[in-house]
Image (tube, rainbow, N blue to C red; front, side, top):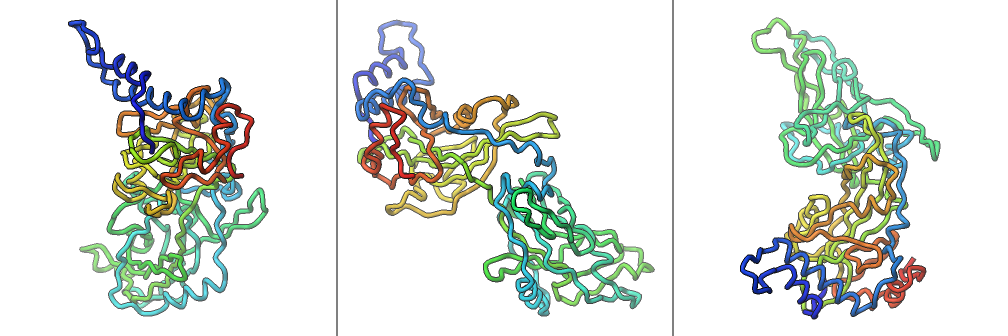
Length: 439
């Protein structure tokens, strides 16, 4: 953030916004006065600091492109287009044989009365097959029951729809599918991508369907092994009340959670080629200047086919990197401090005694069906709103409230003016051909 000087132009703008500056008896309060004043003051102080921007200065937005992802979009939570995952997702790594051996050994221990006590906190995640149980259990008639015979359909709770979602291709305690990447030609084995699942608290995040008793069961534990997370199920079954003759539906617990094991890993956006947006929140601070770190986020604009709407839609893949401001600030309605899990008055990832948090990924629909729009215009349309009232804007030839730079750009530390960190910034304001940043 930076301080504001009450200049003559700003005062005039304020007077124009509040018509009570005049003597008219029918003056009307302008509800947009505060926003108009802030923007007028920002424009004036920016020009006083750096000079009048070049008439063709588009602040980096003219370089943003639109990526064509029309082939791989699914209307369901599961995405099994493994040959095209590379387009918008960082590729998964196959589960190794050594990993499988170590994980199976850990889940093969008896854990009497063990219960799952946590939910995995990822909106988008990979599910990978680790182990299909080979040891039989015994049903109520004394017959052997194998996981591959009755443990059908791995299920995951979708917080957005408030229902369980079938993790596609995970059936019979197994997933043996193979996808070949169109770009690297690498094979991905036993893997499904789950997207837009939401996060929160629920008693049972995972389940499987038992075909013998036609019911869902939630008898699993989650273990963290070498920094990765695994879900292991213990086969179980109960006959319905009043159907005591159906003892073949019963499967007694042995409290060994190795009948079906899967690995769950966060899925991250492939942000190669993304653009970094740096912005000023127009707030006041007496001891700082233009640092353009009040919010920092990467954006990748994609043209995607939406089968439910039967049309192409522009979506923005966003990676929130930093929040150097202490005013409420939203990106497409999402408050950035809340996304980082901190209070509004906490600055995040701007160094110099600020809090550190991992980057946060989310995706938004820009509400644009015209996929011929430029990437720059699409990125400009992403609503960034401060204090629930001030919408940050960028206009060619005017002082920028948002600036687009390559995602290799290192944003300023807190209270370091951008012209101090990047001395060529002022030259770039006057001439868009100047290369001012560090990449």
